[in-house]
Every structure is written in structure tokens, then in C-alpha cells.
Amino acid sequence: DMQLAVHKFNQHRAEMNQKPIAIGVGVHTGTLILGTIGEEKRMQETVISDAVNLASRVEGLSKLYGAPVVMSKQTMDLVINRKDFSFRFLGKIQVKGKEIPTSVYELLEGNPDRLKKLKTETRDEFEKGLELYYKQEFEEASLCFRHVLNNNPKDLAATLYRERAAGFIGHEKPEGW
Image 1: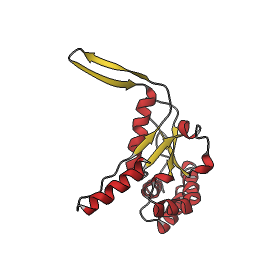
Image 2: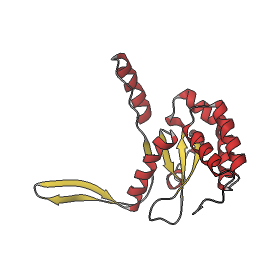
Image 3: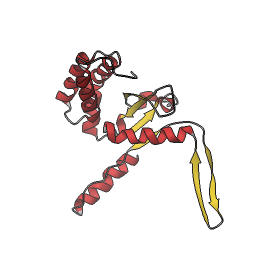
Image 4: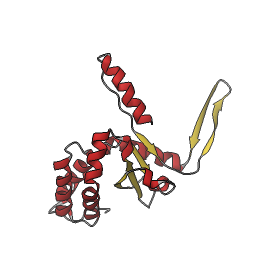
């Protein structure tokens, strides 16, 4: 709904010859502490927890992957009516201070209809590329992402992984893999 509201707002901005704006949404689920900090003359509400930090990291991925809505696996696992939504696995992220990587997904409904259609049509090939990438089969992964890009040249996530995979071809296993 937020992405749809921004789309409508941008139509209004276009009528006024203003540039469009974009937002990224990151969703993660976990516990947190909510409270007020400060002193009598300067008080502020805040939230503190590992979950809040991870949510912030997930939101930051929206720009990197060109995905309007990114969610963690923890949130994805809580989606009751998955058949009502379209998702695409975007990969695993390693958050500073955490040993276990977190899987992240793109909610395709956050995309304009045309882009959602293209990402849906290339989802299997994209996810196959990710599987090969994580198996360190970089040449094959690069070919999968190239195929995705042939159908959807503006897919930033496919571009990112194609470049990463191509950069690893002919090199030793990346450190910390």
C-alpha cells in the first residue's frame, strides 16, 4: 500500500513537473524495547534491539537490490496467506555481530505491474542462479543471471549477482564464504 501511495503521489508530482520520489521498505519480525529516553527538556521515543538493527539492514537492501519491499525469512515465515502474494528469494545477508546469515525476500507486489510480471516470469531462473552462486558454480550462475537480464535489463538484483559471479570466475573460493 505504501508503494501504491508513492506511485499515486509521483503521478501528482509529474503533473507539476517535479521529479518522482522512491521509498524502500524493509520488514523484519522480532522483539524490541520501546521507550522514552533523555531528560525533562529533551525527550525522545526510541526502539532498541537486534531485531530493529536487522530491520534497518533489510530496509537498506531495497536500494541495493532494486526491490521496493524486502522482508526477512522470520517475517516471511509468519505470512499466513502466501498464495495471495508473490515473493522472490533475494539471497542471504550476514549482519555484523551475527554468526548466522539471514535470508531475505522481495515482495513482488511492491513493484509496478509491468516489473512484477517480468520478475515473476524470471523468478525461477533468478533463484536457480542464486542456488548455483551459493554452490560457487559461478560460470553457470552468471549465465542464469544473464538470461534474467535479457528478459528484464533493469533487474538490479540480477545485475548485482551477475557481476559478483563474473568477478569470482577463475578465482579461488572467496574468503569468508
